[in-house]
Image (cartoon, rainbow, N blue to C red):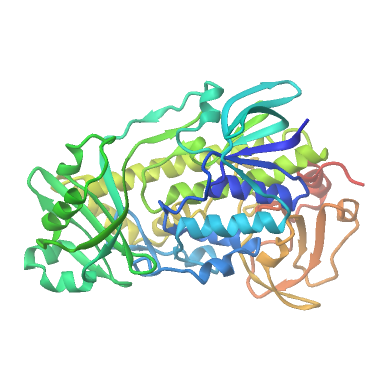
Length: 510
């Protein structure tokens, strides 16, 4: 074998998978077709659960130094309905979306890899993938020619047009895009707040000026509605996004012309000549697809290679990072030889349904955004429902990722399968937040009873599980919990089944 694991793709998902492997002592080979890191940020925001996992590995603080204002209050919204989704009931330090460019996330993850001794091999295009019972062979094309690399496992993180997925002849079922969008990074002649002051009363009724020198709305136009938004990014650049009848008449393959952008501004705002420069522009659609299985023998798919989603709120980036956080420690356990039977298969059984729910919710939100006056009664009913605490909490948990519960047996403790809330703990060594317990990527047995931690059973797994005693100001409904390296609870308060849970998730005792 040339290596234990090949990671194909050095976007955010691939970098996160590689970083998780390296943290667990597995040195992957990371192959990326592009010769340099992309300077284009399709996604602009981190959802609360993604912020938690980055903080758990000590990566969030650096990203917050580059935070941008998203143009909305701290809450998220569902389908642009005027009722905020409140994430506070999910007990998180980050009950809001954080504005960070995808390029910043990828830059920090690549630095994390370098800190762990792993470099990205750029200009390495994977052209073929073959597997047998013993391993995977990847054919790699570089400027110097072609070569073959052999590994025990391969992870395809190479995007929606994944070469890995196609090499395995894996179907990608779902819905074709029915609507096209344009996104462009532009430098404006004047800030949006100046635009908004000049809007006529009818346009001002449909376009809202938002915090952070941004603007968004849906404007009625002949033949339909024009979705239009401007978000301030960094260094005087704004992200302009729009979709309307005129966009649908242009083939997706057609490059975005400056005249098309100017026409969208004119149609939405009634203003001319507001552009100084177009830095980047692209078209995308509302296609939604998901593979039926995330694992195919020794090849695993993650991120956009496994699912593509309506480009609404940056869910693609966030789903990919959460895939990687779930997969990394499990694949490392498999490679290191201590994984219990079936552990790696739980990557599919946990992450596939998580993405399926978000694909459904994203389509529902897009329908609300895209529909005309005929959906007004439905919107009014949903506004009433979102005013109910339980409904609001449920949708906030889905959209943010905080409410995810992995499949668990009937009768399991209510915490099992869920993330452990990021509580403030009191330990013998002083205050400690839960996320610091996860910094090393190990399991954690957390005893909140107030007594010294009971090591009678867990001590036999101390080589893989940290044992901590603490108290918490908030009651989580359990005195003792076993937490996986990804922060999800896998056992709570059932002493008779503790050894079984340890063996199920952390292999044989020492």
